[in-house]
Image (tube, rainbow, N blue to C red; front, side, top):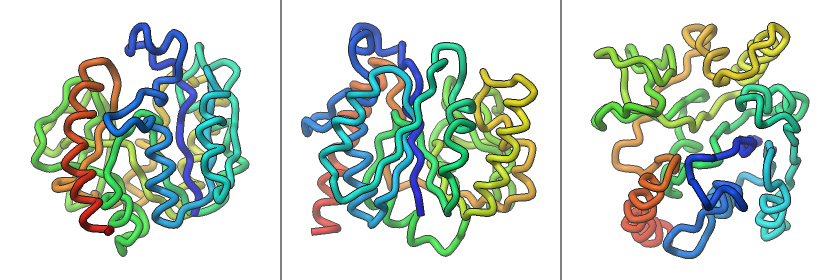
Length: 246
């Protein structure tokens, strides 16, 4: 299994911090950066092959990855990151995505038990959904019917839509189908939308099951308000993980 982490965006809603740093370099209360934490927890669960898409401050990401010599890293640079969304970075990385995959965004903070249980889940294709959390205004929502994710968008607010975070576990065939749609979008010149726009065209055929993250922690840091909230909220989950994993 491989992991692709999309770190090619500007993160410009972190104000002064992101003028000189990648957003995933923001430090949590334990002193660890968001990116370092992602790598540490995934490697602790046995994942060692990473594809990292980059844009600004690529050297910062490479320096963090150097702390994990037991893992393999492929860095894929998007030179036009200021003009494109991460769908284009996914397109650039397509030749390396030749295995079962975990897809995640570089601004996600999550606890280790979530990673452990997603990987251990018998379902081959999953995406993280919370059926109890209030629908976010600015972030992704997932449309779920009979336990199956059918659509992901920031614009849907129907009764069958729920809070969603972009942490996917996909077997190779499903990942390849998504990549194929991404290639179609790029060839049509659609490089400024979310990669989920391409995925939405084939979601119903892929049998991606909703993995409920109620009782776990996963959230994105999109701006300074998110940063203050998430860095506080993750602390009890870290204590829980410490007790759970010893």
